[in-house]
Length: 400
Image (tube, rainbow, N blue to C red; front, side):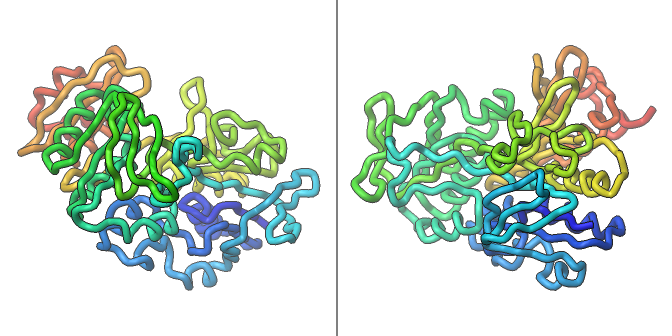
């Protein structure tokens, strides 16, 4: 049985390795459009951009691992089509047959339209190794950088730029940074931290367009102000890479729609990672995280081999900014209140509730709060909010 995996990122790497670990003896071919072997993306906007991590430390596995496992990597060759009837994918002009196909195609950063300056030289996104390599030379002390978007990617880039001595401005059109993903309490904490490091955070501030002839020179804001810039980083979200699946006639619903096993609308085609949406508590979600990419891909590997085990997501995320380690457990969708628990020193955690149900935790340099919150959510336990705030020993809440 030949399994072809389209996408050589975190999910594709995890899926191929798990197939072998589960005893699959047939062919495994992983197709990637980037020339680099499978690598970690989170350090790109942090340690790698700072120059604290060399490229080979990004690799998910040593180069010899893939050969030893009998996994064929075909890199630097984008897949241009899928024929579900013939059960082939087209890559490099070749029609490659499959018994099972897994789509782990990931996502693509949203870019600013060319009409408002998105195509100017000096405008970057942060997603791939090539993206970061292209911008690294821009990070020189004293230069001015504008970050468009106050989400996690933009704020991580802002932290790196600030640490390297740049003049940093973050533009966020929403009333507050992190509005889409976090409570006001978390936004306030992170904003204050950035401001303490000299970053200018402009909220409720719309971008009219970037200005410059061939290269960006600044940003014209909706309120008429013009801010100078030596370069610009755009962090305004990502789009799931579902084009191949859509062209092949698969069902698309906020990404490539799968059932709880990870199977798409075609019984021979599976999907996992950023590109895949799946059933969740009566609805459908798509998770953009390393943890989900690995866990979902490993579940799909088992189901390709007949395990028949539904994927039960256990959402968790993290972000590193300056000396802050923000750890998030659960999903705060539909929360109606947040309670604050003070930890040791400057540590603090914010606990999201809907009614009496605990949904999620944002932990700031508080690994204990994160670990306990994650376990409570996974166990379906919801201690009363006042207990969370007042109990001296959070671990005691896991008993009984």
